[in-house]
Image (cartoon, rainbow, N blue to C red; front, side, top):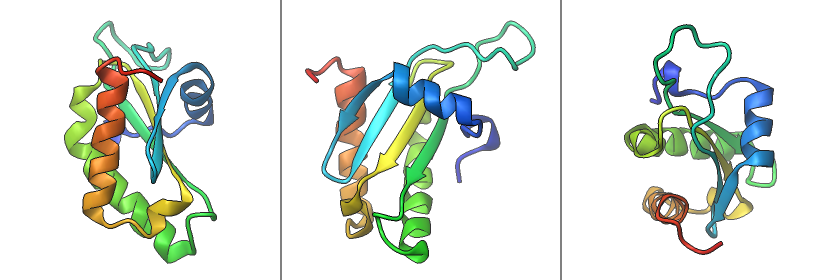
Length: 123
């Protein structure tokens, strides 16, 4: 499970990442990244942690399938959240193909999209 301090919860944060961030797409998901955003609600001067959120629409499948996809994505992001710069906002949006993808395929797509965003790959 993704720790609480790494979860993206507010609507404004989702909107900021999607509208002002860069994105990388794969067949089963799209990642939106807003690098190094400072959180005005965080006390202190330390760098805020990277926060990740997930969007899984009804196009992916029924409630059982959507929840399964969300659980898998949260589990995968738990090990990858430290790859992003501190203070980043990350939104992982599942595409309709994510409902049929297995865990390994989601992991490959997630890794490829992260590499594309952080490695400076062409858009």
